[in-house]
Image (cartoon, helix red, strand yellow):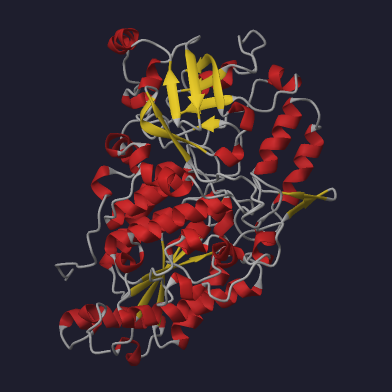
Length: 571
Ligand code: FES
């Protein structure tokens, strides 16, 4: 390799600055030859004990480091903000963009030639990819792997998915609270992230489909030794990627995004993938829109039979062959000639893959859902779009007209949903406002609002629900999400009133509020934007600058690739 590496701008030479850069690094015991021009690999670690899904990364990172050393590189680990889904309030999504800023600036400001991104829990994957894409140094992502299948009282439990089911059962009086509590320990019984096809598994699969990971990245469980082997191979590979100068901009092409949409359809992936993929595309400057989601995903059947849409879990998906095997089933729908992190094309990567279990990865003639993907709806209620996951919805509700029962915000919903006097029946359409990017703020995962107790007791298990919120990837139901513009930004959702008729037609991709334009104009004149109760700090910056869901909910000033150059020295 004749090209001078970026890190040499710090470590090469005999002047005062080079002395400073090397000398302080030597306090870690690094020998002189650590600075001889070998590739310096930053390992961006989202380890945190407050992000339990990534809590095993202290061990996993050691395998990455060994791989970097094997290949003649110098590994330097650095921590970044870790967005843990289960603990962060008001919602981890509020901090995805903040974490991406941390990642971007940490990469750009430090002496590194390439980066390994260590992601696991939902938001850690997009935040790392967004930040790294804005720098465009050679980058590879390693996922932490999923937890083993949950087990409780002789049955299999899926993260998240069974929490929603059990909590509805408790509310409906068919499960005791003691049993509910006992299920906790059986659900999360090993290191790793959620093992349903929720957002974490979807994002790991999406990253693999984008080609920014080694093949097999998505499915090895966290505790499988092959996850550690993969970490080591990832460490080796990034050193060669630096030598080849293989950057995200060469991998994250429009074709790669289209592949990712098709894979998300075939796995029955989380609706959260929509905002994250749009945001990542915005960072690399690829022209990729909400309509591309519908166009590319519309005819893709869901083949992977995993919860929340199906029966199995990530461990089963791994043994069935994982993403490479799935891709062989939909290979005619994929761009096989795209370049990936391996240096080879996608087609070459999956040439030897095969499916080992037709129940978990179904054949094309026996799909879980003939039309997977994400349906993008438009109409006077969502002029800039809304999304629905057909594979998680009830077929009978895909075309539905009903009377709106309106909750002004999440607190209003919580106060009134179980009120016996609430005027609602199974045909009603539940509408939740002010839970979008600006409104919550952070676009919380509350769109799959639980049904009123009295309807659950009648045996009702699904209803049409509409909001500007997101939904947990582990949830299910006929739930219209990401309505744009959101209510807090003055979108038509803000104007819906109790008793209005709403018409949903998923096959026609429409969402209509049956209220005249004149009446809507009258209501608009009376509308005032909600005021955030907490002022100042990052939260205010977020509310002021966040883009709507159809643009990926990134901060407007973060869109784009700013490259890895730093014009000035610090001394
Ligand atoms: Fe971390 Fe589900 S809570 S992946």
